[in-house]
Image 1 (cartoon, one colour):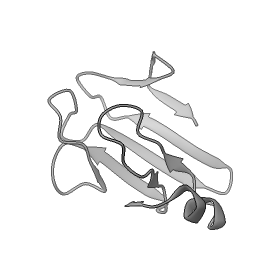
Image 2 (spheres, one colour):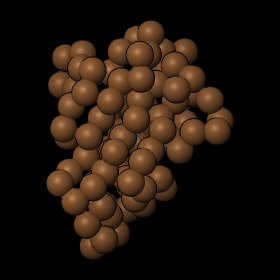
Image 3 (spheres, helix red, strand yellow):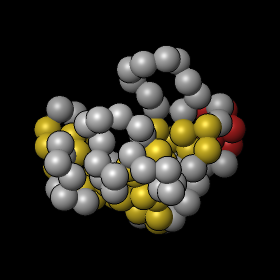
Length: 89
C-alpha cells in the first residue's frame, strides 16, 4: 500500500482508496494481494483513530476484484453508510 497519484494508479491498473474526509491526500493504491487495515503500527494500512480497531479489516485483491472483510471490529466496517461483514468492492 502506498500513496500515489491517480494517474499512476490508473496506468498500473491498481484499485485505489480515495480519502473522503480530513486533509487532502493522494489516494492509497491497493498494490498488494492481501492488506491488513488497523490502528496498530504493524499493519499494511495504518489508520490511527479511536474508532479503528487494532486489526480492523482485510482487503483481498485478485484478478476478479477487491474484497473487504470486517475482522470483528468494535465499530464495524461500512460501505456506502451500511455496515458490512464482507463485500466485493
